[in-house]
Length: 370
Ligand SMILES: Cc1ncc(COP(=O)(O)O)c(C=O)c1O
Image (tube, rainbow, N blue to C red):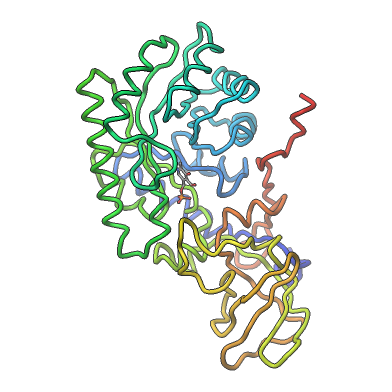
């Protein structure tokens, strides 16, 4: 079996022991707190990793795109799928209706227009929906009071069945670890208020769903939260490390690269650029990361710049690095990095074990020909 150091570079690696541990850890915590796990798939976009999450006990999945939903239903045997965002438009809604026939689907609304369009197209079939609540990210979602109005106005559509409320406190990425508790508390308070106001007007709430990787552990302790939908936890990354939500040894995804040049005393060039690592330095205003990824076992090195295919690395202090050396880089944002490749090379203790296809990326099928 091949050692990862003999692989061609750049290569995308996934440490299978770490991946499996991350999946198991989050599933166990969810089980211990009687919370159902619906992992968000946008992090890995892989049917095979979805299967691992379902086999570990996930109740269903959360998808960011219809492509993800269609592929995992077919390839991973997933039975319950939540759409993270509202969908509108003729051809997109046709796809939603098809999905609804092949799994237990939960669509998401934060205004009436997509609901009206979907209801018209559905005719007599029924579809389950959730209302998205804004708990501070200020992206999708309505306030608890607006949720009541939306619920009331959607009641005229007999084919739309209200099931619950959901939120995503992505703003946590714009702060440091010290704010995680405060943000989670605010999220739970707002979701509890929304739930209670909806119950007062006769809504039957089957679930209250939240989820980000950094807030997961605190949010699931609340009795109010019944579903959690984290995504990044499968791989973690340098942003989570900078935030204090993970350690370097929790990061499963790395990019393998070779030192191809040493143009000056303190500079090195690697053969992986923004088309491997992505240009993310943080999400939602986060600027805690240093450079464009962590070069493992080389604290003296910082990736100070990326061209498309190469990285510029600066040393600060002594280094043994030489032209021809191979390094492993933890990307700043693993969700973006995994989306840059068709496959990941799964290894254990540096020995290659198997290929994991990243098969559910957008446009991975030529849909226009359908
Ligand atoms: C609606 C929603 N839920 C959950 C997640 C997962 O968050 P994280 O990757 O921080 O775990 C995301 C991420 O973009 C999201 O948009």
